Length: 181
Image 1 (cartoon, rainbow, N blue to C red):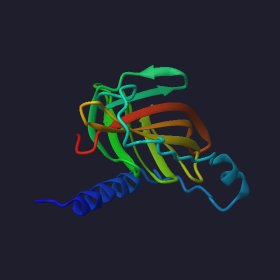
Image 2 (spheres, rainbow, N blue to C red):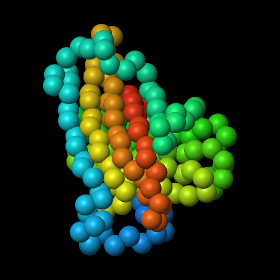
Image 3 (cartoon, rainbow, N blue to C red):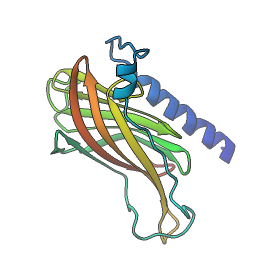
Image 4 (spheres, rainbow, N blue to C red):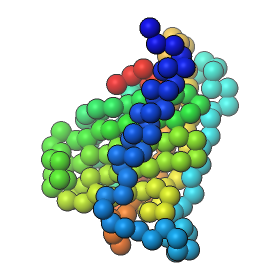
């Protein structure tokens, strides 16, 4: 039987793995220059006040809502969605028509923990990255508990993912349930 400590350790490892898997797609960015650091954007994390309080205004299911350049993307398959209230989440999802190289459809994955976050979008034959030192990423986290005792962690992120010198504006809302997908 897994203890709470073991569950937290497993979820932390999953988030770390997702952050690592969504790493640099091969383009070497010079993160030491002031220009790249200025482009990185801000990273924010907020736990909802009274996260242990009952809230019926929060999400009621796991979901990934993505907009690329202002247009909604029909994310239909969530492969991973792991969360720890007050800590963060990691996820991986895609459209039904996604092909691994990004020649069709969209895949999105990422991880958010404390003040660190990273997002990888595979789209139009490219891997677009938003993280500290590459692209721009701003996010916040809200934890909610429903009247029936279920918990959810929601991250709202915006910014511009980068592929070399190109940028791709995005907005993302991902909701995961601890012990979920």
